[in-house]
Amino acid sequence: MTSAPRDPSRPFVRVSPVRVSPVRVSVVIPALDEEASLPAVLAELPWELLSEVVVADNGSRDRTAEVARAGGARVVPAARRGYGSACLAGIAALAATDIVVFLDADHSDHADELPIVIAPILSGRADLVIGSRRLGRCEPGALLPQQRWGNRLATALIRLLFGHATTDLGPFRAIRADALARLGMSDPDYGWTVEMQVRALQQGLAVTEVPVSYRRRTGRSKIAGTLRGTIGAGWKILGTILLLRLRHGGTQRPLSDQS
Image 1: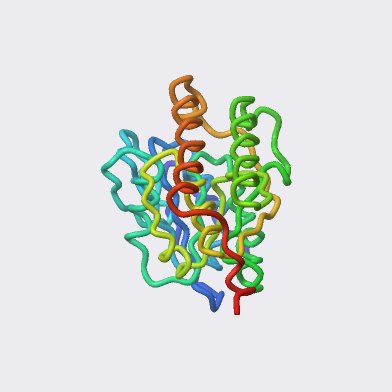
Image 2: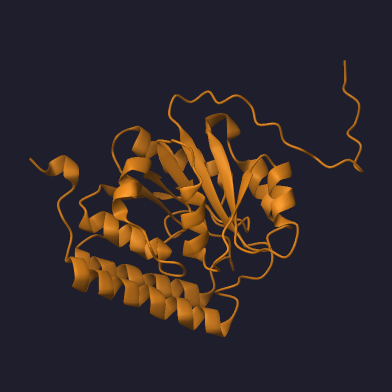
């Protein structure tokens, strides 16, 4: 028996399936005016593995909140503008969980690769996993030249100051919830991702990378798409690395290696 075709005039509303994973996995998606891209992001997520999906709405003026709810996510407001502020608001709204996954709302990350990103945590090999776009498949034009240059400079500085070889500051990442709570994350904007990586190294967490795919985002980037945003993000990222090194020192041994 074939089902009747869906009426295209009726909005699609996702009903999240029952979670089958014994580990609680929560997803935080910071979003600002991502009405066009967010439905595709939510549709790609492996919902059967997830406890909840939280979209942190960073002051959108479009239908971001509406399409997020229709896609099965819980929406929380993040009144203060900034990528880090949205992530912090999403974290604060989470229910009890074991793993927190972060990814962008612009459909540049491949949300269906979430199992790859959380695998090192599930196997006990890592506390923090960074999805590396340099190690994976990056669509031509997905990373602008200034992004590639800035990324290489920042990761080289991390290697120099903290002795940890890394290739990316990618937004698609996963971290154990208890480890995240200990990091004391605070950066409200561009320094968020690098703050997480550096603080994790300073606290002796096991940090690793996995290759992930990356595509051209839907719409224009609010950071890399403007000269002001590019310069501001670059200085903030480099400044965050140096400031954390001065305040908190270098890298501890991974906790698993400490007696």
